[in-house]
Amino acid sequence: MGNQKVKWTSEEEEALKAGVVKHGTGKWKNILRDPQFAPYLTNRSNIDLKDKWRNMSISYGQCHREKSKAPRVKTISSDALSTPTSQNISSVLIAEDYAVDELSRSPQDVRNAPGYNAMIFEALSSIKDSNGSNLGAIVGFIEQKHEVPPNFRRLLSSKLRRLVLQGKLEKVQNCYKIKDAALGTKTPMPKQKDIRLRPVQNSGLVISGETAEDAAMTAAYKIAEAENKSFVASEAVKEAERVLQMAEDADSVLLLAKDIYEKCSRGQSVVIA
Image 1: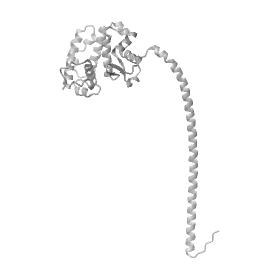
Image 2: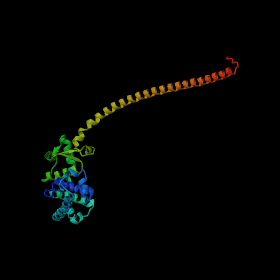
Image 3: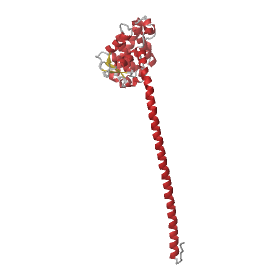
Image 4: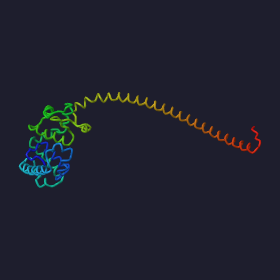
Protein backbone atom coordinates (compact mmCIF):
# COMPACT_ATOMS: atom_id res chain seq x y z
CA MET A 1 0.00 0.00 0.00
CA GLY A 2 1.13 3.55 -0.61
CA ASN A 3 2.10 6.05 2.00
CA GLN A 4 -0.95 8.29 2.43
CA LYS A 5 0.84 10.65 4.82
CA VAL A 6 3.54 11.75 2.40
CA LYS A 7 2.61 14.80 0.35
CA TRP A 8 2.65 14.35 -3.39
CA THR A 9 5.67 15.91 -5.10
CA SER A 10 5.56 17.72 -8.41
CA GLU A 11 7.53 14.86 -10.01
CA GLU A 12 4.94 12.34 -8.83
CA GLU A 13 2.09 14.47 -10.17
CA GLU A 14 3.78 14.86 -13.55
CA ALA A 15 4.40 11.10 -13.68
CA LEU A 16 0.73 10.44 -12.89
CA LYS A 17 -0.44 12.83 -15.61
CA ALA A 18 1.87 11.32 -18.21
CA GLY A 19 0.89 7.81 -17.14
CA VAL A 20 -2.81 8.55 -17.59
CA VAL A 21 -2.12 10.01 -21.02
CA LYS A 22 -0.23 6.85 -22.01
CA HIS A 23 -2.37 4.13 -20.41
CA GLY A 24 -5.71 5.85 -19.75
CA THR A 25 -7.79 6.46 -16.63
CA GLY A 26 -8.21 3.45 -14.36
CA LYS A 27 -5.05 1.68 -15.55
CA TRP A 28 -3.27 2.40 -12.28
CA LYS A 29 -1.46 -0.95 -12.08
CA ASN A 30 -0.15 -0.51 -15.61
CA ILE A 31 1.14 2.94 -14.72
CA LEU A 32 2.90 1.62 -11.61
CA ARG A 33 4.49 -1.20 -13.62
CA ASP A 34 5.62 1.05 -16.47
CA PRO A 35 9.40 1.51 -16.14
CA GLN A 36 9.02 5.08 -17.39
CA PHE A 37 6.92 6.10 -14.38
CA ALA A 38 7.73 3.47 -11.74
CA PRO A 39 10.84 5.30 -10.38
CA TYR A 40 8.69 8.33 -9.54
CA LEU A 41 5.78 6.37 -8.02
CA THR A 42 7.59 3.81 -5.86
CA ASN A 43 5.86 5.08 -2.70
CA ARG A 44 2.36 5.03 -4.24
CA SER A 45 -0.26 2.32 -4.75
CA ASN A 46 -3.03 2.02 -7.30
CA ILE A 47 -5.48 3.40 -4.73
CA ASP A 48 -3.20 6.40 -4.16
CA LEU A 49 -3.14 7.08 -7.89
CA LYS A 50 -6.92 6.77 -8.17
CA ASP A 51 -7.59 9.17 -5.26
CA LYS A 52 -4.97 11.65 -6.41
CA TRP A 53 -6.31 11.70 -9.95
CA ARG A 54 -9.85 12.29 -8.69
CA ASN A 55 -8.66 15.18 -6.50
CA MET A 56 -6.64 16.66 -9.35
CA SER A 57 -9.64 16.44 -11.66
CA ILE A 58 -11.83 18.30 -9.17
CA SER A 59 -9.18 20.95 -8.53
CA TYR A 60 -8.66 21.44 -12.27
CA GLY A 61 -12.37 22.05 -12.78
CA GLN A 62 -12.59 24.60 -9.95
CA CYS A 63 -9.39 26.38 -10.97
CA HIS A 64 -10.32 26.65 -14.62
CA ARG A 65 -13.74 28.13 -13.87
CA GLU A 66 -12.10 30.94 -11.88
CA LYS A 67 -9.66 31.95 -14.64
CA SER A 68 -11.51 34.32 -16.94
CA LYS A 69 -8.39 35.16 -18.95
CA ALA A 70 -8.07 31.63 -20.28
CA PRO A 71 -11.20 30.86 -22.34
CA ARG A 72 -9.82 27.55 -23.59
CA VAL A 73 -9.51 26.32 -20.02
CA LYS A 74 -13.17 27.01 -19.29
CA THR A 75 -14.23 24.31 -21.73
CA ILE A 76 -12.55 21.65 -19.56
CA SER A 77 -14.80 20.49 -16.72
CA SER A 78 -14.52 17.80 -14.10
CA ASP A 79 -17.13 15.75 -16.01
CA ALA A 80 -14.92 15.69 -19.09
CA LEU A 81 -11.95 14.70 -16.98
CA SER A 82 -13.83 11.70 -15.63
CA THR A 83 -14.21 10.24 -19.15
CA PRO A 84 -11.54 7.51 -19.55
CA THR A 85 -10.09 8.72 -22.85
CA SER A 86 -6.54 9.83 -23.50
CA GLN A 87 -7.78 12.68 -25.72
CA ASN A 88 -9.56 14.43 -22.84
CA ILE A 89 -6.60 13.96 -20.54
CA SER A 90 -4.22 15.36 -23.14
CA SER A 91 -6.52 18.37 -23.50
CA VAL A 92 -6.30 18.97 -19.75
CA LEU A 93 -2.52 18.95 -19.79
CA ILE A 94 -2.36 21.25 -22.82
CA ALA A 95 -4.95 23.58 -21.34
CA GLU A 96 -3.03 23.76 -18.08
CA ASP A 97 0.16 24.88 -19.83
CA TYR A 98 -1.82 27.30 -21.98
CA ALA A 99 -3.47 28.90 -18.95
CA VAL A 100 -0.19 29.37 -17.12
CA ASP A 101 1.53 30.86 -20.15
CA GLU A 102 -1.35 33.18 -21.01
CA LEU A 103 -1.70 34.52 -17.48
CA SER A 104 2.02 35.18 -17.11
CA ARG A 105 2.80 36.79 -20.47
CA SER A 106 1.23 39.31 -22.80
CA PRO A 107 -0.02 38.21 -26.27
CA GLN A 108 2.96 39.90 -27.92
CA ASP A 109 5.40 37.99 -25.71
CA VAL A 110 3.61 34.74 -26.56
CA ARG A 111 3.98 35.41 -30.28
CA ASN A 112 7.63 36.47 -30.16
CA ALA A 113 9.06 34.03 -27.62
CA PRO A 114 10.49 30.77 -29.07
CA GLY A 115 9.33 27.39 -27.81
CA TYR A 116 10.54 26.34 -24.40
CA ASN A 117 11.74 22.99 -25.71
CA ALA A 118 13.93 24.67 -28.31
CA MET A 119 15.42 27.02 -25.70
CA ILE A 120 16.11 24.12 -23.32
CA PHE A 121 17.87 22.02 -25.96
CA GLU A 122 19.82 25.05 -27.14
CA ALA A 123 20.99 25.78 -23.59
CA LEU A 124 22.03 22.19 -22.86
CA SER A 125 23.82 21.89 -26.22
CA SER A 126 25.71 25.15 -25.68
CA ILE A 127 26.72 24.56 -22.06
CA LYS A 128 28.04 21.05 -22.87
CA ASP A 129 28.62 19.91 -19.30
CA SER A 130 29.27 16.17 -19.07
CA ASN A 131 27.54 16.08 -15.68
CA GLY A 132 24.53 18.00 -16.98
CA SER A 133 23.24 21.48 -16.18
CA ASN A 134 21.07 22.48 -13.25
CA LEU A 135 17.98 24.64 -13.43
CA GLY A 136 19.86 27.82 -12.50
CA ALA A 137 22.42 27.41 -15.28
CA ILE A 138 19.72 26.75 -17.87
CA VAL A 139 17.66 29.74 -16.74
CA GLY A 140 20.75 31.98 -16.73
CA PHE A 141 21.68 30.98 -20.27
CA ILE A 142 18.17 31.57 -21.62
CA GLU A 143 17.76 34.91 -19.80
CA GLN A 144 20.92 36.20 -21.51
CA LYS A 145 19.46 35.54 -24.96
CA HIS A 146 15.69 35.94 -24.57
CA GLU A 147 13.19 38.07 -22.71
CA VAL A 148 11.37 35.90 -20.22
CA PRO A 149 8.35 36.43 -17.92
CA PRO A 150 8.77 36.91 -14.14
CA ASN A 151 7.66 33.35 -13.35
CA PHE A 152 9.86 31.85 -16.07
CA ARG A 153 11.87 29.75 -13.62
CA ARG A 154 8.75 27.88 -12.43
CA LEU A 155 7.49 27.40 -15.99
CA LEU A 156 10.86 26.10 -17.15
CA SER A 157 11.04 23.67 -14.24
CA SER A 158 7.69 22.19 -15.29
CA LYS A 159 8.89 21.88 -18.89
CA LEU A 160 12.07 20.11 -17.78
CA ARG A 161 10.08 17.57 -15.77
CA ARG A 162 7.85 16.87 -18.77
CA LEU A 163 10.86 16.33 -21.04
CA VAL A 164 12.31 13.89 -18.49
CA LEU A 165 9.04 11.93 -18.40
CA GLN A 166 8.92 11.91 -22.21
CA GLY A 167 12.41 10.38 -22.30
CA LYS A 168 14.00 13.33 -24.13
CA LEU A 169 16.10 14.45 -21.14
CA GLU A 170 17.90 12.58 -18.39
CA LYS A 171 17.93 13.88 -14.82
CA VAL A 172 20.98 13.05 -12.71
CA GLN A 173 20.54 14.39 -9.18
CA ASN A 174 19.63 18.05 -9.84
CA CYS A 175 21.15 18.28 -13.33
CA TYR A 176 19.61 17.68 -16.74
CA LYS A 177 21.28 16.11 -19.78
CA ILE A 178 20.15 15.36 -23.31
CA LYS A 179 19.65 11.64 -23.80
CA ASP A 180 21.67 9.88 -26.51
CA ALA A 181 18.53 8.94 -28.40
CA ALA A 182 17.41 12.59 -28.44
CA LEU A 183 20.70 13.76 -29.93
CA GLY A 184 19.67 12.41 -33.31
CA THR A 185 16.63 14.72 -33.42
CA LYS A 186 16.97 18.09 -35.07
CA THR A 187 16.86 20.98 -32.61
CA PRO A 188 16.84 24.66 -33.60
CA MET A 189 20.32 26.16 -33.36
CA PRO A 190 21.35 29.83 -33.43
CA LYS A 191 22.18 31.33 -36.81
CA GLN A 192 25.71 32.22 -35.64
CA LYS A 193 26.51 28.56 -35.13
CA ASP A 194 25.23 27.76 -38.62
CA ILE A 195 27.63 30.34 -40.02
CA ARG A 196 30.55 28.86 -38.09
CA LEU A 197 29.81 25.42 -39.50
CA ARG A 198 30.33 26.51 -43.11
CA PRO A 199 34.17 26.19 -43.07
CA VAL A 200 33.74 22.68 -41.71
CA GLN A 201 31.55 21.82 -44.69
CA ASN A 202 34.24 23.09 -47.09
CA SER A 203 36.89 21.00 -45.36
CA GLY A 204 34.61 18.02 -45.83
CA LEU A 205 35.27 18.25 -49.59
CA VAL A 206 38.96 17.50 -49.02
CA ILE A 207 38.08 14.59 -46.82
CA SER A 208 35.70 13.31 -49.49
CA GLY A 209 38.48 13.51 -52.11
CA GLU A 210 40.87 11.55 -49.95
CA THR A 211 38.18 9.00 -49.28
CA ALA A 212 37.49 8.62 -53.01
CA GLU A 213 41.19 8.07 -53.72
CA ASP A 214 41.41 5.42 -51.01
CA ALA A 215 38.29 3.77 -52.38
CA ALA A 216 39.79 3.67 -55.89
CA MET A 217 42.98 2.06 -54.60
CA THR A 218 40.97 -0.49 -52.64
CA ALA A 219 38.87 -1.30 -55.70
CA ALA A 220 41.99 -1.78 -57.85
CA TYR A 221 43.47 -4.09 -55.24
CA LYS A 222 40.28 -6.14 -55.08
CA ILE A 223 40.17 -6.42 -58.89
CA ALA A 224 43.77 -7.68 -58.99
CA GLU A 225 43.01 -10.13 -56.21
CA ALA A 226 39.93 -11.37 -58.08
CA GLU A 227 41.96 -11.86 -61.26
CA ASN A 228 44.56 -13.83 -59.32
CA LYS A 229 41.87 -16.04 -57.81
CA SER A 230 40.38 -16.58 -61.27
CA PHE A 231 43.78 -17.68 -62.61
CA VAL A 232 44.29 -20.09 -59.70
CA ALA A 233 40.81 -21.52 -60.27
CA SER A 234 41.53 -22.00 -63.97
CA GLU A 235 44.77 -23.85 -63.20
CA ALA A 236 42.92 -26.02 -60.70
CA VAL A 237 40.37 -26.95 -63.38
CA LYS A 238 43.15 -27.89 -65.77
CA GLU A 239 44.82 -30.02 -63.11
CA ALA A 240 41.53 -31.77 -62.37
CA GLU A 241 41.04 -32.54 -66.05
CA ARG A 242 44.58 -33.95 -66.25
CA VAL A 243 44.00 -36.19 -63.22
CA LEU A 244 40.69 -37.37 -64.71
CA GLN A 245 42.41 -38.28 -67.97
CA MET A 246 45.07 -40.21 -66.07
CA ALA A 247 42.33 -42.14 -64.26
CA GLU A 248 40.65 -43.02 -67.56
CA ASP A 249 43.99 -44.21 -69.00
CA ALA A 250 44.58 -46.31 -65.89
CA ASP A 251 41.18 -47.97 -66.32
CA SER A 252 42.00 -48.79 -69.93
CA VAL A 253 45.33 -50.36 -68.96
CA LEU A 254 43.61 -52.37 -66.22
CA LEU A 255 41.04 -53.76 -68.68
CA LEU A 256 43.83 -54.68 -71.09
CA ALA A 257 45.76 -56.47 -68.34
CA LYS A 258 42.65 -58.45 -67.35
CA ASP A 259 42.08 -59.50 -70.97
CA ILE A 260 45.70 -60.68 -71.36
CA TYR A 261 45.50 -62.59 -68.10
CA GLU A 262 42.33 -64.42 -69.14
CA LYS A 263 43.80 -65.41 -72.51
CA CYS A 264 47.04 -66.62 -70.91
CA SER A 265 45.10 -68.66 -68.36
CA ARG A 266 43.31 -70.48 -71.22
CA GLY A 267 46.65 -71.28 -72.92
CA GLN A 268 46.21 -68.80 -75.71
CA SER A 269 49.15 -66.86 -77.05
CA VAL A 270 49.09 -63.09 -76.80
CA VAL A 271 51.13 -60.85 -79.09
CA ILE A 272 51.79 -57.31 -77.82
CA ALA A 273 52.78 -54.95 -80.60
